[in-house]
Every structure is written in structure tokens, then in C-alpha cells.
Image (cartoon, rainbow, N blue to C red; front, side, top):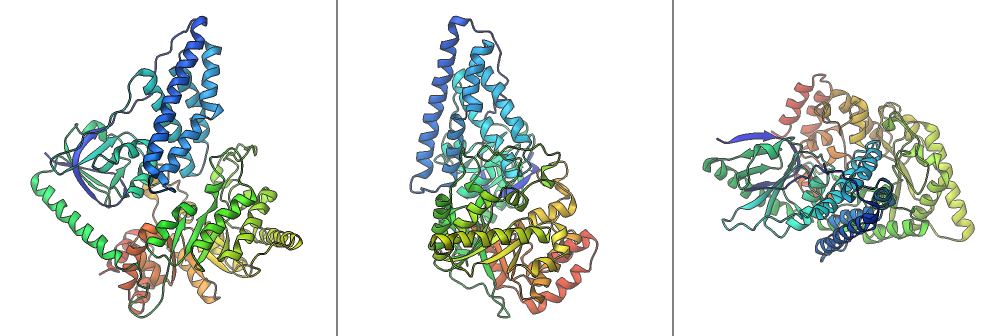
Length: 576
């Protein structure tokens, strides 16, 4: 009998195929004593396993980056290769073998648990989920030590793909699978920022995660359907259901091919209003995706990815090159670069971490930048130097107080004075803007409007802080609701205040790239959307079908509602 399971949709599309169960070693290894005379051999056994895994990862990276030198998947493998050399992991395990006279796999797992505990203290969901890299690279080493290497699924001959079902997947796993007609990924754990989600989106493979016990509910070779748009997995579908989803898949593929025709079409509403559709990026590696959809520019360049996961901070010249590459490549299109959004709970080049009971409310984003003025000044100098190569806008994250803006502007003035003294060029007209991510900022916009040139609403954090919900906590994630009346009032109020005072406002959170909210945001008055490049054409299609004269009054009525169910129904009716 067919049955349905619901999870988190993280990569759109429909996949129909046979289950391939990927074993998940729980790393519960035996602990045994090693005689002193055999300790050097035990250390060497660990060294050989590490070398084997290193060779596997190098080979996988070569496969991932063939023809794609800036592959996102390749970057994940780089991170795992770096972890092999982390003294906190392998080197410490070597020392533990000698000190405790124990076997290599037990020593390695003990060190892994210590490192994972440190990751658990990190507030940022993206970085916290990077602990999966530690577990996955240790799992690979343990499998070699125990003589249980992984195996790839066989290629199918019946025209159907293979659905990988696992507790979790590493980037290395996904690269190894990609030449084997993989239709989709399904995992017990994970969220929107998990490796499976990111890699699946990168490879355009449907995926549903967070299914908890899917591996216990399906059998090897069983037929499975994944609806990566709705977050639905159908186990053992009958022929009628399979045909229905084949039809849906064909419709989606046809729709996607039609969307590609919109690449060079200006995003203009039916009543002639131009809308800017910008891209969110993490660095120069994303430029190909930005150009593929002919984005109107970059609305959010997350610079923290230059700083994280490395032993030494990027110096001014390295940052300058990264910023210059993006500005120059986009040939005059606007590029909004956000100053680094990191916190004291994230290790940066030996900067001492502080214990914070609640890092989400601690020293992060602009607060951290102002607490480390020299680091901030270095970034500002690099940004200003790059400004001569394109249309740069600098954006300050997580503002809540006027003095944070004033201090940031003073440091920008100091950076300009230093560059003047050194005879280095920059564009003196660079605009400075701020992110509205906390309710305090959205409710006291005057202080920002008087000091800044533009605003950008970070809906992910704004929703999280407004509703007091950690969206990475599975126990409360169901309460994370972009359509909560309080959230909508804060977003609409910010957009309307910007329009009233002639200050451009954009939305750069997940809401901007979700077609379910496009008409709502347009009706609020939003004209600048910034999103993952892969969502731009779908949002453009929504814009082209919109009539603002008809939308605006309907959205104003929605903003007066105070019941979430009524808001949701009314938003769904906007498309009708």
C-alpha cells in the first residue's frame, strides 16, 4: 500500500526512482588497549587511513570541479580536506593513542565528539550545521580503519533513477553519486542550510530532508516519489500515482524551459512599473549563476564567507581582489556588499571567543565589527579601493542603535582619510545602507533614514527575532511564519517609510525568492527583490503577471488582518 511522509522541501522538482539505502555508521566503535610496543603501528594505521581519505577527497574534488573551477561542491570538499589537517582532530587523536594506549578509531571518535561540542555552541544555523563535516570526514576515516569502504548504487536499466535514502549525506557522497543517474535525495536529518540541501540545489536534484526515520520505513529497491517542491515523499506508489507525477514532472520541465526565455526580459508589471531582481551571493564563485539569469545586480554579497573556516584572516589585498572581481564582472550593475556578519562565538584567527548564554542576542554582526575596529577598518579599506571598479554599495548588518551607524560612518571616514593619505583611489560617492533585521530597527526607522542612503530587510532574522523562534530548532520551527501579522506590519512599515522619504528599500531574505510572497511584497510597495540566483526567473514571471493597481488595495486590506489563517487565505487568493 502506498503511504506518504512529509518533510522539509529544500530542492524543487519531482523524482521517481528506486531506493538505495546508504548506511550510516553511528561511530560506536570498540575501545581496546594497545600494548606499548604496538603504539607506533597504531599511529601509522591512523596515518594510512587519513592518507587514503585524503586521496579520495582530492579525486572527488577533481570530479566536482571539472569544467567548474568555482564549484560550490568543490568548496565543501576543500573544507573537509582542511579538517584532515586540523590539529584538534587527527593530530590530537594521534596523541591520544599514545597517552591512553588505545586503538585509533576510538581515539579519533573521542576527539570528534570534543570538536562537535564546540560547533554546538555556535548560534548561526549555517555554521552550526558545518559540524556535519567533522562527523562525515571522521566517518570516512573510521570506515577505512574498519575495512568498510562505501559503495555506489548501481545504474538502473528501467529508465528510472535512483533515490538516495540516508540518515545524512556529505558533499563527497553526493559527488560520488552524480554519475549514477541519481534522481533525488531523502534524509532523516537536515534543514535548508544542510549539505544535502545546498548540494541538491547546486546540482538541481529534488530533495526532501528532516524526515526523522525514513531509513526505517523503506526498503532497498522500493519505488519512491519525491516532490521537492511540497516536501512530500510517497513510498510504494501504484501505477496511477506514478503516471500522475510523471505528468507533473513534464509540466515542471516545460515550465522551466519557458522561464529561460525570460532571461533578457525586463521585470515590469502589467501597469508598467519596473522591478529590480537582484542576486544574493557568497563570492566570485557565484557570478556564473548571476549572469545565467541576467540579474539586475547583486543585492547581498555575504562577505563573512571570506573569513570563516580558515586559520588566518584575509588581508586587505585578498579582500580587495574578491570584491573587485565581482564589481568588475558585473560591469556597472549595482553590487551591495554586506560587511562581515560574524559573532564572538565563531573562531576567527585566534580572536578569543567569549562564552555567551545566548549568542543570538550577543556580540554579532555590526556589534562584533565595532568591537574589532581594526578588522572592520581593513575590510572598509578593501571595499573602498574596489569601488573604482564598479557600482558599489556598502551595507551594515543588524543595526539597532543610532550610535552603531555613527561609529560605522566614522570608521568609513577614517578609511577614506587613510586612502587619501596613501594616494589610493576610491569612489567618494559610495552609498552606505543598513539592514533591518530586528524589530527595534523596523519600529524606529527615523534614525536610519536620516543617516543612510538605502535599507535592506533581512526577513530571515526579522521573523526569527519578532516571533522569538530559533528556525533551526525542529521543536519550534513550525511556528516560524513569514505571514504572522506582526511580521507583515514591520516589513510593510519599512517599505512605506522608505517610499515616503525617497530611500530605496529591498528585501534580501528568503521571502524575496519565494513566489508565494511575490504579489504580497509588490502590493506593499517593494520594488527591489534580492534572492538566490536560481529563483530570479520564477519571481520575474510573477512580476510580469502582476497588476499593481489591482494588488495594492487588496494587500492593504490584508495588512489590517490580525488572524494568521485569514492572512494566509487572503495571500493565496492574490494569485487568483
